[in-house]
Length: 150
Image (cartoon, rainbow, N blue to C red; front, top):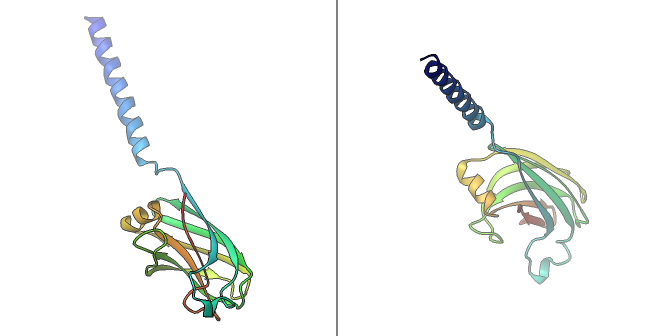
């Protein structure tokens, strides 16, 4: 009878350890997800070819629902005015802005920002539908852009 009692106690202890282990595992957020892009001139017609130049790169880290963005750009013909994270219906298709970024108001500089994303926006990010776009004085409809991809 003593052996049966000890076996039941060990079983209960093991189940408790498993339960608490699963509880701790479930509460830990997923590992950070990393994305990157190269910034290049937006699609333009011949009349804007001289005004829309430059390049750059951006890195993004998704931690939970927070998307942190850092990057640099250079070679633009006029100072940057604003920058956004935008969401298209597919990779390569323009869409509306979903968040503002801080950008150097110069022809070369940095771009940074943090956004809290909705579940729909996170899914769009994972599917390659979010992009970064920088606007400039000579290209108010967009100068540089790049889709955030893994």
